[in-house]
Length: 208
Image 1 (cartoon, rainbow, N blue to C red):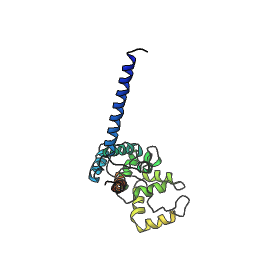
Image 2: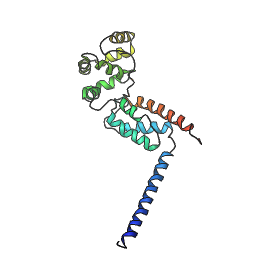
Image 3: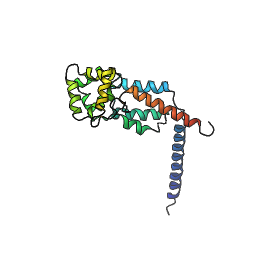
Image 4: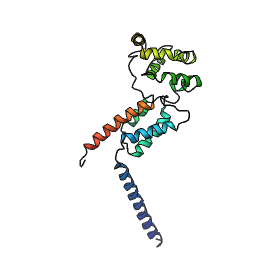
């Protein structure tokens, strides 16, 4: 056996041990990070979307944009055990709503309806009805189309219309929120809930 090979192999083993120990130490520090205050989370989320091109508060958000943000929040110390559930609830980039609301006419329509409660929920449910996607396209392109969403979300007659649509194919619970994450505001509510659950779980750990 080459006499120079043994020291070299021994040195390599020691070096690998040092690297592994350093990696374990780093991982431990990441796990021990305190859960950030919600004010810090909120500032991070709002700042992130503010930096997105052509974004305004109330705009529809998409999964492609949200996933890097969730990773950033985890790096800050937010556990996010429900990360997949939150991500899955965000509309996909190539989905019907995202496509329609990314055109110039769609963007204008989106910013007209975003002021109304559950506007995206109604629009989403409407798009799932028979011929619903064409109806949404017509609302976006037609003059005053946003007024139909305003009517559905704020007027008593709109609620009655929703009850009638609930009896149509794929229209069940038309007036109810879908549970999806359409905006940064809704995302923040989900993150606040997730943080509260993580903090509660952390308090139950031994030594806390």
